[in-house]
Every structure is written in C-alpha cells, then in structure tokens.
Amino acid sequence: MGMRISSNVGAAGTSGAAAWQQRQQDFKALTQALQANDLATAKTAYAALAGSGKPAASSSSPLAQLGQALQSGDLAAAQKSMASMRGHHRAAAAASPVSTSPAADSTGGGLHLVA
Image: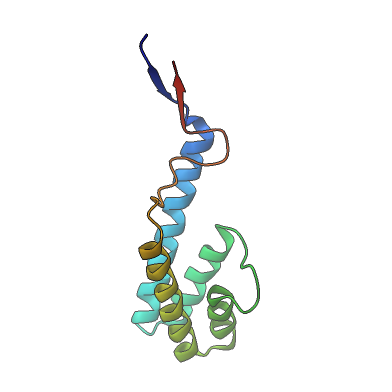
C-alpha cells in the first residue's frame, strides 16, 4: 500500500500568500520611514499596512498606538510603538516552534494524506 501526498493550496492559498507578502512589504516601508524620521511617509505606510490586514484587536495594541501617534504627529511615540511591536513579534517568534509561513491557511489549503 502506497501513500499519496498532494498539495491543495489553490487560488485562496496563493492570494493569502500574496496578501502576507504585501503586509510584510508595508511593514518594512513603515519601519524604514520611522527610522528615517519621515512622518509623512510613515503615515502613508501605516495606512497601507492597516488597510491590508485585520484591524487592531484593541485601541491598546501596539499597532493601534502607533497609528494614534502618527495621527497626532508624534514621531517619537510612533517609534516607541514600533519598537514595542518588533519586541512582541520577536518574543512570539521565539516562543512558537511552528512556522509562521502562510502556506497552510484555513481556507481549505494544505496537505492531504491519502493511504
């Protein structure tokens, strides 16, 4: 008896991966703008990032705080929120033994084992 392994990522998985990559690019642009002390570009990058994914869970989340700081023109507070977000991301990545790759999502993609 052989085992067949097939992948069923499909269009939903591909669009999920593309959305994830776009979000990564938006986050990188935001980080670079904050490092360059460029408030206008940071606001634009934040708008793209906030619009490309799920809204922040609460107004106290680091992403929401960053957006509030940018909205009020407080570049130092925005940079502090970014540092907090990056710290949370690193801690979560270190604690999670599971890959954060978007290849397997809940839209029906993934691997199917057939005996």
